Length: 281
Image 1 (cartoon, rainbow, N blue to C red):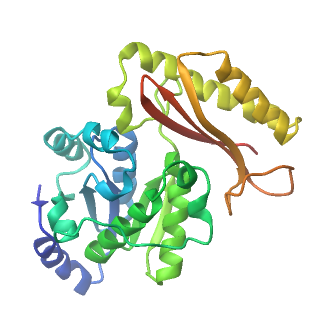
Image 2 (image 1 turned 90 degrees about the vertical axis):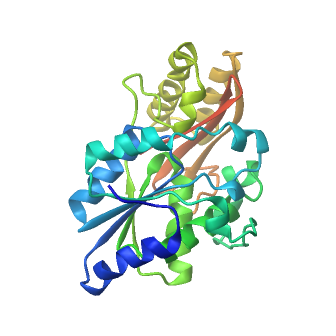
């Protein structure tokens, strides 16, 4: 397995594939890989001539310094997991200095309002950081197809908008959320939860699933009230937000129209922030 730490070497490796017009699949990650990441890799390997995975904890998308410090970094274990999919996958694991050339700041992006909803509202500057690093990685890897999990659905929509606005010729592919048997959405941050907390966290998906059932007959207001009341009764959780939005513009809905809707949630459990979402129709 080839592991690259600098841009020039990876670009040189990929140049032969570009000249032969081979398809390049790309899975950008921040490491601490789980089965959800591996499912993206498997899809990429199936659909492309070559697959690249990046492992990079991007500092500019963290508005909470403590969260950045505590984010799990498990490169050796990650490489072993990647090998279970294929030992032909190229791994790009650069340093912060390599990616930012000694100037670790994000650019500023307009995503036509997508960046101001939910995560953007609760994590100022987050999507500027996401846009900055994804654009850098796309320019290095020049993928044909890039794969993102729907757990970060807002990020997925923002990456699609980034590609649209920059004119990059990249197909952005959203992949279903991978869940534990309990229903808990797989996330690298779950490593910071105790086994007891992981059991407790399973209630997030149960409440979302009940919200989906209610959405068929109840108003948006009533569904949101149900979710807030449900977490109010669980003092170990602290609610950040629950929103119901149309999938296309992510603007919070007040009434139901003939659109695809999704419910988005962010809660804290033992100082670990958990996010999840569910299609409502």
